[in-house]
Amino acid sequence: MAIPPVAIAIPIREVAGLIEVLEHAHTCIEQLSGTDKETLARASGSSLIPLLYARAGFASIQKRQNIPLLADEIGLLEAAVINLESYQGNEAVLCVGYQLLDDFAKRKRNSYSLCRVHGILAFTDEVDDTASGPATPSLT
Image (cartoon, rainbow, N blue to C red; front, top):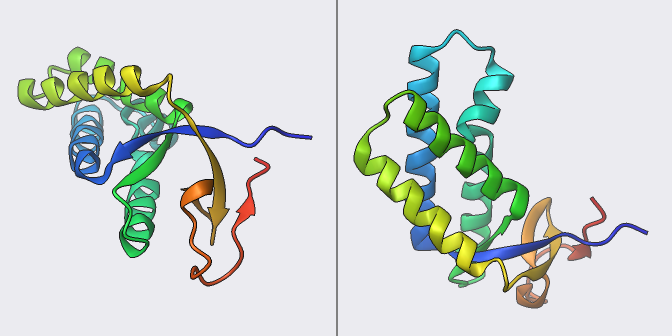
């Protein structure tokens, strides 16, 4: 049986900074390299952006202040920051990226179990009975 994934909690207010870093990395890498779309998405972490918006939207509807971020997804931010250094990204955006990485590293010791609601990751203990549809444990 697969172990349900765990994640750290990040405040919705940090999502904007995280998306800013990922979008800037995407733009820099796209402009300065001739890489394919799949590699570009991994190197910049931009594949995470739609998931962040979905989680933030769901958290907002549930009147929650935090969204889940998986350890693998923190790795996407690390890759984006490293690539921004290589491609001489905006210094202010790099500072935001490093601050987020530092904050996320401190939170790693506090991880929470997850479930999926309508395909969106949510913290198991935060899912309301009022959510339309069942909250089912994630097996992937």
